[in-house]
Image (cartoon, rainbow, N blue to C red; front, side, top):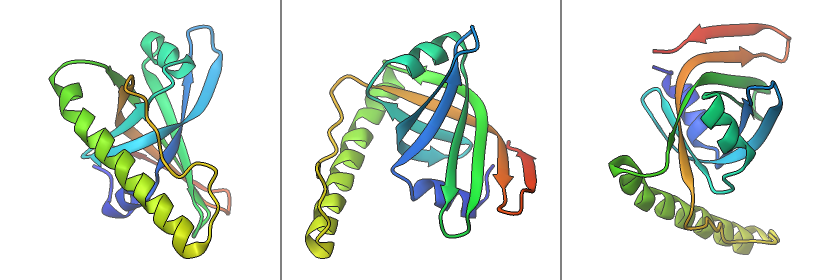
Length: 155
């Protein structure tokens, strides 16, 4: 189980970068909409359903990355991925996706009004067709500005 501090850092993000690789070794990295963190799992929304989806169908391993801009500590999360595109779990997640989409859109509008921030798009539009990547966190790598790495197995 990841610690509460790291969970908070992850949950404070709207998007996280996911890297995948096909069976011929061709890499792909793309931002994905972060839905939630539950236990050792991250749930990401893929509404493009393109290369990342194809790669994960062939090779269900991924690496996620982000940086804490306050501490400049980088994080890499490695693990296996389950694609959820139908069934009971998917049906249960649909409402969560729409609620998160609405919350983010509202936050962007409020930020635009209160801070005078000009966003080209205030609304976060997720098409009706999307899949969920359920990433099982197996390893967390912490990358410090000093160049030191700290690897930790999860779960």
